[in-house]
Image (cartoon, rainbow, N blue to C red; front, top):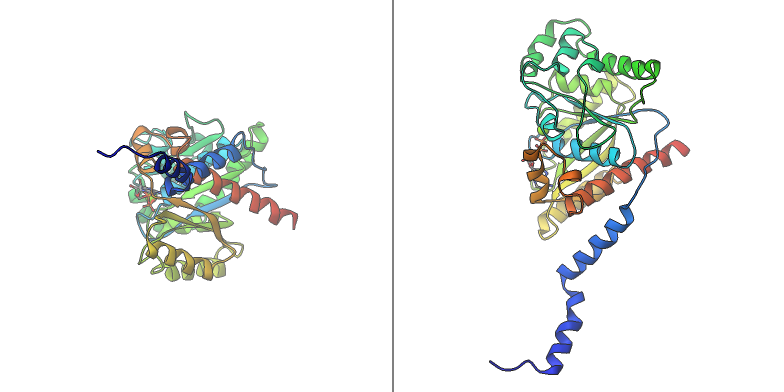
Length: 312
Ligand code: ADP
Ligand code: MG
């Protein structure tokens, strides 16, 4: 083998900082530093956000739990309401959601106070969860024959905020509602209860298909049930910066929704998908990784945009 000449050695070591990998590492170091000890502004009043997209597997649950964890880790009080019978958000937040546990089903169908079903999440102070059990699968049908079937979630949240105030408990700064992948009564309840909709969009070919249906439904809710509802936030998830398709989809979404799309995108990351199997969010499972950094940056954007809007 030829010995490496001095000249070659110099060139090689000088080039290292220019490799994409070295640049990515340097960028992550900077991002970590920026986020260190970050405290986020408390909104003047509770922001209730529904995380919705009738497509399955686009990152609704992953975004709900990780944004919630990121907000709580920066000093805010956050409640996640799991309205998907799958109970994936409950799992990721370490909440017990075996069939016999009091859950959001009892709140919606039996009128049980929200305070009686909420659990503290073990890993992050200020993070709480109203879990979903498998019972919720029947709620979609059971709700149909109940009075005020569309406004039950709204009433329950209002009563809970009132309960916090009257008992001296800290009132949540954020309530994030994780929706099932459908536009049935559970999702309608979530839309009626919220001020804001957060739509996660996966950057792939069919991403925009179905989005117009979702927007039409939101418009219908605005007209008939909740005039204040608006899409405040769009988060691009599972973003693969190496593919041209992802960049094209991202550009197209940004073009249509310049105000709503967060600058932060969430990359595809194995750590993000692994975290739930340890009953954790990526914020505690891999706090220094790129997945946690992205969700913390997205949470910062959401909180800071909110604060800017309040001032305006
Ligand atoms: P939804 O709630 O919209 O159905 P999920 O949040 O459950 O979607 O995500 C669908 C699947 O994709 C899950 O297995 C989840 O772990 C995985 N996933 C979500 N976001 C990411 C990501 N950024 N990187 C890798 N896997 C992800
Ligand atoms: Mg889900």
